[in-house]
Length: 488
Ligand code: C2O
Ligand code: CU
Ligand code: CU
Image 1: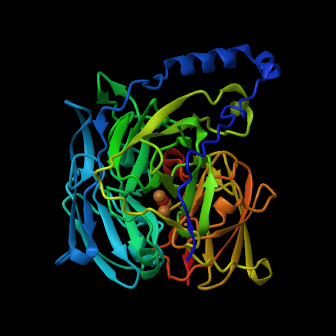
Image 2 (image 1 turned 135 degrees about the vertical axis):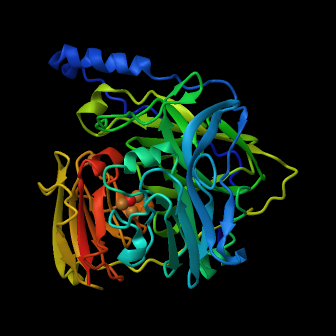
């Protein structure tokens, strides 16, 4: 096997703000609009410049292999201190905010028992799981207050970073915002044999990235009454901590990034735009690590990255807040100036250097061939609907056949698109073949235009338990930008 060796001080400084566009023409178009945007930009919190002082919160790990009996998850309201000493009202799985990371293994089954202690219905969707509709946890699958949902998840898919969250029509945005989200990590024999960083919380760190508003350190609850069109807030929150740091060994460190925000997209980068490696997309490892300097992520997307901590004492991961449509009109007006800290990695020489090499071969992806496509579908996202239709629980929008290769053309504009039950490969993004770092298995895509994807479904989803496709801006999903389909 060949490996990437540590690079000694190869720090490329790149023009980080080269994409900033000056659009004086736009300024003339509407003075009113400019005033509004300038005002809203001024209201946003400026990034903290001080060093991180809060240790990163790492969700508890529950490893399915060391469990006796089912994993027990209590869904309940609670409290959480985002800022030390100041408690906010939140919800969580077995805790005040977010939930435990559940590690599962390909070829094994995991039993989980979810009990709803909230005073409203909820449910649990396994985002990224390849499972039948009944286990998938779509809007049909309600857990009423006081009820328990016992589920057995047969894991047949490859190693990947997935997550669980509520999915009831009309309350997904509010419930996720209150803190209901957690990781499902899948490993397999191959992924464990590669020598990738995989010591949980030490050199393999899950990070759920969200944005929240705070008043005097307290999280602003989800707006009551009318749902906002897309809730984008001021302060970056990482695993429920703000501007955190964590100690890591002087070796390669893996960060499993999940954009768990309701509506915000980000561009992640390292301070000084230093290079890092992307090793996985939503559905599994890439064929080999791809060196990049920036990484855009829309709500629902996951990407695993690896940072080389052997040659640097301190590395800051930062996030630029992207405007709603970062290639379009808005992008021209709102500069890419607002960055906030995600995580400060501090190398600790006393920690054992676990992964000092990074394999160059990670995975084999056998591409789908366009000539084998049997069905083509088009999805146009606009006006809070998809193909002109809003989600109707009584309407099945299409029927897919088990094992049939489909080509979906997603004309998504500013909407990140996600479907349940499978992973896809990108055929094209806005007319171009996907970049190397996008040539992996995915279940959520934000082409900012049009994408063509290839996919097939290997599990059944009958009328009672159909799969969903939807915009992953949670407000849009709740307002009906969703459809459902069966697989037989
Ligand atoms: Cu992350 Cu249909 O959901
Ligand atoms: Cu999903
Ligand atoms: Cu949308």
